[in-house]
Image (cartoon, rainbow over all chains, first blue to last red; front, side, top):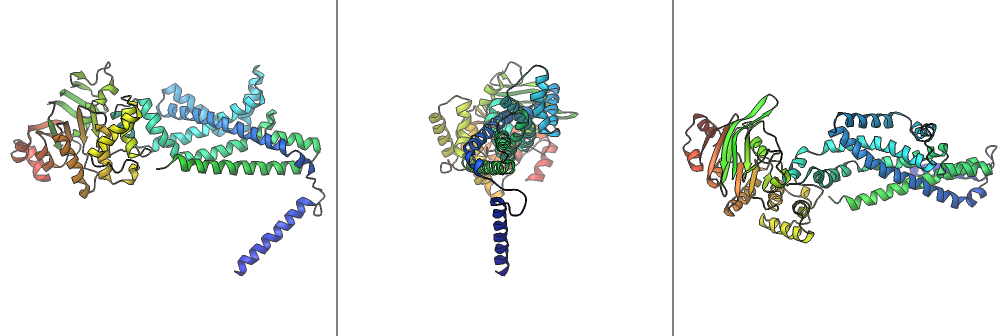
Length: 246
Length: 240
């Protein structure tokens, strides 16, 4: 009881000092001004939607390519399997930033000029696909082989067996790793500002340098990211309750 | 009619079927007994091409199972199979487990598929489980579900691969009763089993497998009560 009240007392003091830190400049040589941030909230909000859009699209592409890569690696011919392995290795073992730069400056050097949005979409999709492919591969290997035989024995084609029996079960197995990757995609999209993409970070950078309120704007952006991720996790949780009734 | 002509099957260097000759007529029930590893189950897998063969031929209703030109998915619609591990599809309800193949393989409408599935599930006494998920059912119930799922394709033949081996003893009876029911319906069946008494009572003939060959093939009661070959006698004396 004593401990608990002591604990909450400390929490209260912490909160007060944090609040005073953010509202006035008494503790260090920085005076917070929130007015520009409040004025720019609608801009930040629409930039957050751009971030969400890029993350969701890159995730959808990542799932499709990730599935194909996993199947190539498991059942493909030698060249296909090698192709998938190279993709997966590069996506997982090089910085995401370099992957974005490849689609931006790399292709640009060969005269392929993609829009910032396309660069980010390609870069994130490439990265997502690599990580998801390994998740999917684990998922495929976890499905007992007799499930496949049972489906084929009913006259289902290989494609029907995969789309109706195997893949739905794989999706359930990898659902939570997939959710992680979605969160990761949201956070990674902030790298987009380095190739000129005006998502949440790019927009924040722009507004901050226009108003010189760097700290305030990036704090606000952090709150936006946090809420966005929480929202996605909540949505994923609700979706899983609808999807997985077994 | 299912016909096997000197069928050879190897896994790598290991030859598991050594020149199997066998024919099962329409309406017949053949049981296959023998020790583990004698090739009984492998033969079933070869009959519906879940396994390839290295020599000889297998035909079902005159159709060469392993010919390149044979539409294997079409052929399998005619051969139902039930496995030792029941392999229910865990992500589908009991009803959908049965209705899926009629819908996507036979192209039945959703309503038709549903009524086919309901009929088959009632037949195996699972009429009250339609909306349950298989993982909430006992092994015996899941095995009956697997039987209903195979029957929903209205196959001409049924293959049973040790369907009671993985069940708790008290659940074996309900599955064997379902097989008896099928026998009464006149279904043509090949039943790989360790239940010798069941095989004797229900089948027309019994084949005894030993190390990849059919050691003895005889009318059911004859083979169990009066086995001719020494190996059959030894095997039966161990399991009876």
